Length: 260
Length: 322
Ligand SMILES: Cc1cc2nc3c(=O)[nH]c(=O)nc-3n(C[C@H](O)[C@H](O)[C@H](O)COP(=O)(O)OP(=O)(O)OC[C@H]3O[C@@H](n4cnc5c(N)ncnc54)[C@H](O)[C@@H]3O)c2cc1C
Ligand SMILES: Nc1ncnc2c1ncn2[C@@H]1O[C@H](COP(=O)(O)O)[C@@H](O)[C@H]1O
Image 1: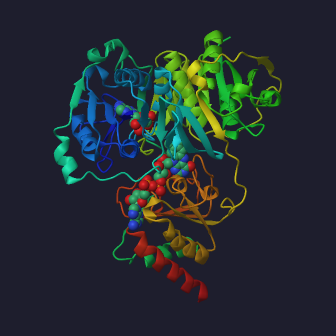
Image 2: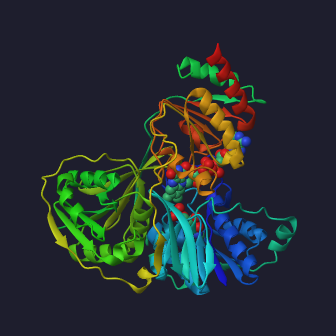
Image 3: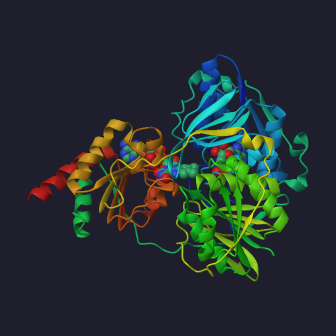
């Protein structure tokens, strides 16, 4: 079984994130990290592979060149191979352009299963998979809180606004996993050492046969027009706790608000 | 007759509240608002949509649309949009609608803007309002060409009765792609009516993955008892089976507005925020000083809930007794 996992690089959430007022794009000049949510998709792929005792796990990413650093973390966790689509012409790609490019990268691999994470920590989109499945002409399951593979089918429990459904899709299919599906492993020291030697491929749009007019801003159908400040909200009072000493301050605060 | 098409989602024989709110918004813009309903045995809902602003209701009624799955709905909407040439297609955010919107975006090469809280016409052009980066900035977003697809954040518009009352109802075809029928729903959600009700509680103590293990919910139950409140949870812990779905707050759970919401070990994702942002006072305990939830808390406590919560419970108990 060959499994493709789409992983995104996102700006480190611990650093202050901003939208560049000039380009009106997310400022990606700081450190990038592997999107936390996607480590759950990768963990699930590794479990499927380990469970069946055979197979290959390939991570796919569309991002600037230096994102290979983040992909190395995926390799250290256990992915067999990394494919990074890096091309200046892809900068500023919206959903339409991103899905088009990633679908091409996935088609090139002909995987039996495509896993994606729950959401980009930066975009909060939770939409890409719907576009990917459509472009790949494959069945889709989203928000999967569990995944079982048998008889050429993927079976998942998933939550909607009304409770839990159980869905079954024929393989090959696209499955977007919830961040509760598993607890991702930490890379072992051996994994980290071994990652450097694993195949790491860098592709351009031309390598995928994607016309530059279909990528980046040229290939996008949405645009950012202006940035404004949100309406101000009340001030946040902050307390740094030390060994539980904040409990009294919390009670005093609640008493002041007449909440206890 | 271009205008806006609204995807109206149904559940147990009724249009969802979110869809009706979005339909009302679409009707308030220039041009006509039409609605599309996809399902099996849903024709009776169509008649009620005129009162919410629909001038035409397109009905795709077919056994293949019985289960709320996105891909057959993409097939229906794609054909309808191509034939009628709508300028825009609006969706109220939901698990189903997001997947339909994203699929339609790919099928039609149409731009999709998501998580919008509002939309307006600026010099005849549609402009969406999108709070981004944990709502720290509001981005005005546009579409470079039509049709403009928009997904609205949960709770953006309340349903109103603004329409003329009567909509023309038209039955439409259900063309299906081969891949659209390869996902099946083998069990369908039915709301668990049992379990505690959190909607009426004045005080809610909510827990997330930061609790570390399901057993530690007892810390929150003790505190909730002392405060006279109820316990709620995030999707991360509900999905993991730590606490019942009936207690989940957020986009796919309940919407609550207690006087006090005390969040313990919760990061504060937007999907959680939409379910509790109207609480009177928000207090958050989180060991990560950068946790997004602090951005919208009245009192932000940076620390370990395991140390703080038991002491807090004790102090509240003492106060009650004295
Ligand atoms: C379509 C969709 C719908 C969704 N619907 C919902 C919904 O209805 N409700 C919902 O809640 N989520 C929903 N989500 C999921 C949401 O995006 C987040 O993944 C989820 O809310 C995270 O839950 P959490 O805060 O418990 O976990 P995490 O994000 O993992 O946060 C845990 C927090 O605990 C803190 N912590 C850890 N240890 C301690 C300690 N000892 N003391 C104090 N703090 C500690 C950490 O710093 C961290 O901030 C939805 C997502 C999608 C894509
Ligand atoms: N540029 C990208 N490269 C690879 N995978 C991506 C990219 N963008 C999004 N994804 C995948 O799609 C999921 C949803 O992303 P989003 O729709 O942007 O919130 C992520 O969790 C990733 O698995």
